[in-house]
Length: 404
Image 1 (tube, rainbow, N blue to C red):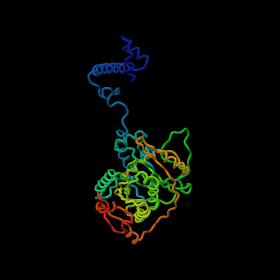
Image 2: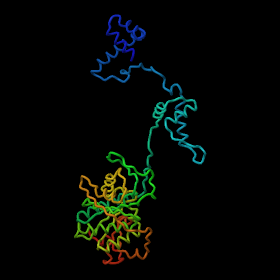
Image 3: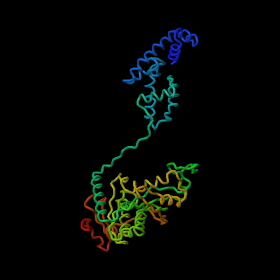
Image 4: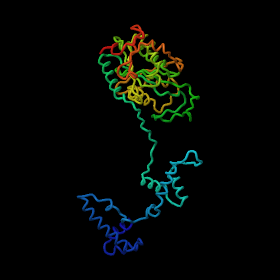
């Protein structure tokens, strides 16, 4: 760069300019002459740029091969040594006394210097990228359960929803949201504020006021969510009580002329497809009590995220309270009630103060007394529970019970 500047000054001075610039700068005449030749080449290239862009080599000021040699050129074994360091680190024996440390570029630079290879942090970073390494986070394995009935169940759920929608019958999606510690605990996400609120350094459950279990009932047709915040165990009885509360407070008035109900849920948790307690409570507290014919369709294993309540209700609740500590139950209920979307989502929230005990046992005799009809398609995931006044334990099939 210096020679080009000197050459341009010499050109401006004209005759005798090279001698004057050489005396003023201490540069040799040969250096200034070389700069003038390069300026001529640049001028020629610039005129050609009107039709085609210059290549990086043409724009380069330093001559090809100029400057200091790269570290790996001066020290050909450094790349092999660096790769071996990382290979040894990832292949350590957990039963040995070897103690591994984090592979930062600073630490790798020190370890290279200890074995006779000098390299700065930037050089180490460049060598790592050159050999295929880069900064990456952990990647979760894609675990696919061998579920041959998965696609068939999705098609069946779609047909169920279409049938109930066409008839004007209610469709609800249910699930329990992630349990939350109530108290001075951090909440993931960020929120606009002048000063960040302080929370506990550690999330010890013993320091919580309580652990809240939000159970959601989402009306798919009306786009309305009902969230029941429990402070006890998340059990099948708790789940069915909340569905019954929804029907008593809203469902029977929203759908006054129907005795049909479709429940969409995942296959685990308090609404487990194999839970006897879940089916018994549906029979006793929902179907028998309100005279409802309750059809349940579970999403296949590992497919709970397709349940409408997950992406149409729970996700927006999480966004609404992101970065805001849930210090009290009233605060939590307020954020749930304040959740809305541009598509018209409305949410109501209630405190469920009932005490529920885990491990409810259901005998074989009680199961045989249920008016439970299994569907012909994926019967472990699809079944209908009818009021027992129709016929206790008759085992009437879904197709015989309801014709459509």
